[in-house]
Image (cartoon, rainbow, N blue to C red; front, side):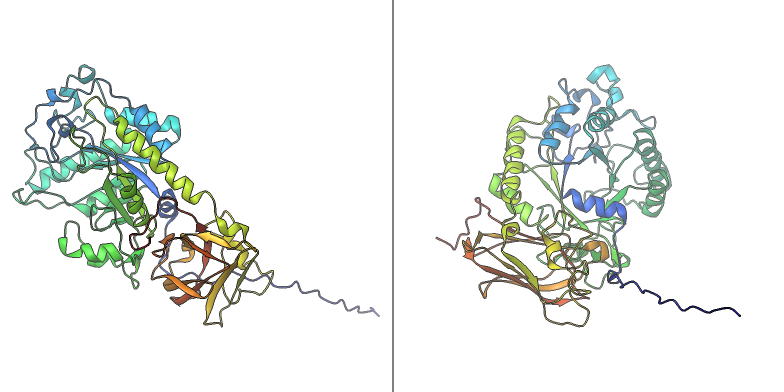
Length: 475
């Protein structure tokens, strides 16, 4: 007879799991793009030599001769500004190509630059690769030079042939830029956007496609570099069309009920114009900081245009202004005063203490995948930072959501020692509040989430001091 022995089964304590995501979600490429925060545009071409913004298409390629062109200087300028992606106007509306395309002779091949053997795209790609910087390209749909423009089939075949050249000849391209810009007197023309997008994804699987309608990154709706104070990364793509002026408001704010993840990119030039003009100077530092707070600080990526001059270099005045800009950003945000707090606590936390979703996560270096998550069955969501005896002195509050699980927060408020100092709607990847009251000195900072699609997930909080911020209504 067998003796039956009973063994106690030790059940391991369950580790709390992350909450379900709120759809839609970003792709891997969209997340990487969002984390760049600041990227750079290079508008360069025949317009640089004609003092124009929109070329006619009748320019003689002989005028293009940037004798001192140094793409390494362009890339070094970008790197020093903290930029990891640069985008070049491979072809603007004038139709002149900065690479020797076999489908047209209206290109660098007919210019005196390097005796017609130059290739600006290749030089930029080489310089960027050497510094670990990614490259994007703009190929203007509107072409004022090519006679095929206005003939749907022939021009779309030509355009796609050039797309294929650019996306198969120069290695990895991380962003391709499409727009609907064209003059009021331009011939009627149907662009085969679906065909273009399909081929782009076939040739470059990890690329982000920018346009008014995505499919990966959307235009913010203006060229001032400002997003809406409410800015969702979600929209309904079915309601978008490229070149439709009636949708700019929708592009600026996004849609809380949007079914597609399509974050906004804010494009603006460091100068008045997009191309270099001898008569123009770079924007003031205070203007660039305003743009930063209203783009990066409103859940967007800032695409800052810095145009090379007729020599083929970024002008020294622009280089210096960019250094000031980068230094200012670092001065403001390199120190998080919240890290010196005495205590951080929250209204509740998922899985209880030790569950992995505590408020301490908002002070670590991971701004995506570690986060404070409140409990499911609580309605009053808040997180609180208590300073040491000396208190906390700051004028900027940074809040970041764990957008890898969706964008959730609809409304929030910030209190210092019980007094309301700021309030807003969306947060997204990053929300920056420059306090209208100026510098505050307090002991307890409480952020209340007043409305959210689901439990709010806050990945990072920062309290910063901006020495450049001087509100007009504060003496």
